[in-house]
Length: 236
Image 1 (tube, rainbow, N blue to C red):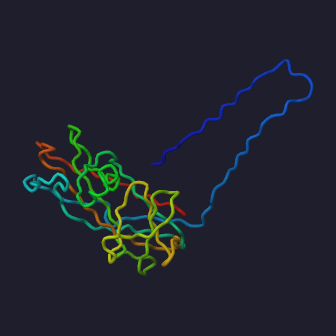
Image 2 (cartoon, rainbow, N blue to C red):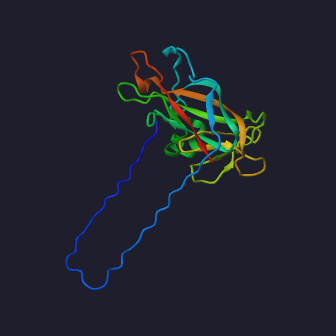
Image 3 (tube, rainbow, N blue to C red):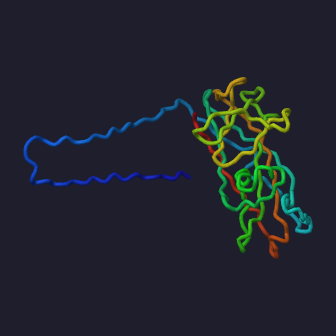
């Protein structure tokens, strides 16, 4: 869904009946109108539109670790981007349950709760307004491909930021980074920070899900984990 922002131009006319002599000089304002016409298009698809954790018996949710919660494991999916012709394209993820993510991960404790929450997506709230849990999305170069070959990915913090390598400083053999709001990812030319034009790219994604402690949720009825996220392509 696109959000349209409107800019209203108000014209104010003042009639001055007492101006005499030479014409008064008026100020000016310049406006530029531009855009880009692209000669192709790209389509994103997911190997699975639903990441299904199945039916979870509440008796399994016995954790008392306030920072880890009840971890329910990983699910792997693939984001495929197919273009009509080689094109430079990035993608980002929007949390459709923004504001419902529970702070449940000792893995990024060093970042601090306020910063680290940006790396987690929400699962909805209980009727009492309690955050049910959270999940993260991790992109891994291992298992990903660009035009059928090895993948080299770049990331940036937002649409105007510089591109940097997709790296994990704690494990140089596996290049990964959690997707987060405002972040963008793209295929990069090896050895550079420049996005590359590609016809096909397959991004290997891993979903990790945690449910909050039962002492915090106090569940008495069946509860649906209601996570939802939108992947959006951006032409570069």
